[in-house]
Image (tube, rainbow, N blue to C red; front, side):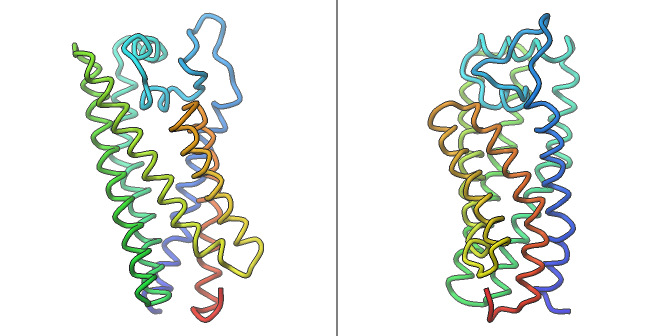
Length: 234
């Protein structure tokens, strides 16, 4: 089994795990409104984690923190899970997709596209870590600049993730197979909605996240199929 097949097999297993985890997180919370005695999240957010990442002001930060336990231990648990599971999972997945592009086509363009994907997702993970440290700093007495640190790191992270989705979509959209091209279009839709949310109503990032989960849950099989049909076919 060559490197392309080995990488495709790993992606086939890992991509649905990451995608379904995202879908479980978003679909369980997006349709629900908060109970009457619980303060609504700012800017129309339903996912408190995303509201915290994209917080706009200190008063909004206070409101969001009220949706967590008084000792904020659940925020620390979410950050620890992000450090230990979420960031390594999506970083490894997209790096593998970048490597798959390089090994499958073995051309200068493929090397450039794959290397760009690896670079962007690595930078996204770095800004994700920066964002997490900002959130941890916000749990202690802090000045107003911490809110800006969190938001700026998060905006860059989500933008890089959107670009990574666009790059990932390329071999799928260019496929001559309609169902696989549709998976690629899901990635494109997620990226477009995400960028629109970063520039406008930030609550749209929630729907970008949901579509990202849907796209990734299908990407493993799509990449496995493209590997089976060989580099001479799209």
